[in-house]
Amino acid sequence: MIRFEKVTKKYDDGTTAVNSLDLTINKGEFFVFIGPSGCGKTTTLKMINRLIELTEGTIYINEKKISEYDINELRWNIGYVLQQIALFPHMTIEENISIVPELRKWKRDKIRKRVDELLDMVGLDPDTYRNRKPGELSGGQQQRVGVIRALAADPEIILMDEPFSALDPISREKLQKDILDLQKRIKKTIIFVTHDMQEALALGDRICLMRKGEIAQLDTPQAIIENPANDFVNEFIGLRARHDKINIFDKQATLEDVLQKAPSEDLSVGHIEPLSSHITLEESLARLAGEDAIPVEKDGKIIGTITRQIVFQYMADRVEKEVNV
Image 1 (spheres, rainbow, N blue to C red):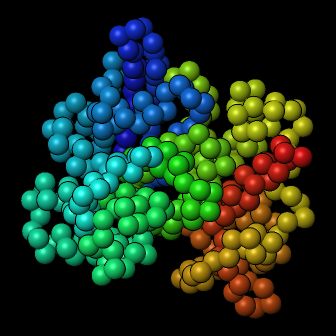
Image 2: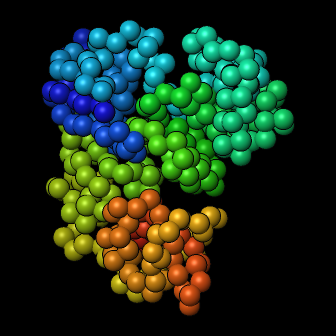
């Protein structure tokens, strides 16, 4: 889907922000870039839609060089969500969402239908919010509008640059859950930048941890926590370079314990065979490798569903608790 081949970004002052980056982001993947300030994660993100031009190497989207795309065609097919929500304050919510569809000359009735569909998708009643101005919305509501504005013209790719970092912890956690629920429905390729390891672990299918413009480790959340590649990764994820691994799974924890922490609102998962509420989280991950969600059963009744994200959020919380002991 998106392929970096020896991609380098050097600035005029001699700074190398990204150094010979090779990686592939798969179609439909939730891919997270993380790392300390100045590591090159945002520069890497912005090179995808050519907000920053690369110095050397090539980026491909669907096996076509990004330099060969018309710049408008490229950006219309890539939604972009910023930390600074950047809604136009004097325009209504509907007008803000409609910008790219109007540029693409969609018909008015198609745009109105799309606006209503997207507002419904993130729990904002169209009749209530369509004609409001951004200043009439809370920070969390504004960020939801920022997300669906990026989705308005149905792009294949969504870039998200620390979109939740300015929000309070409760709003941030709610939006993390919302974006995961949304991704299950829309199946877009999402590239997400954050500096928060817990957020990365909770959201990412894979995580690319960067340092000084290079990849320190690119792996699944589970692999990064269980097998950090080096002392820098160890330090960054909060283990403080200790040689004794944190028991991230907690051998006493069962699926029921995790479900109590993250209850499911939707218990219907088709005809997938349920898991016992008594099995361990480690055992559940083997089953979750091929499924988005699996129902959990106790005494013959479905009590919830389990997802990889729920398990990884639990793991991330354990890391945080261990570090702060």
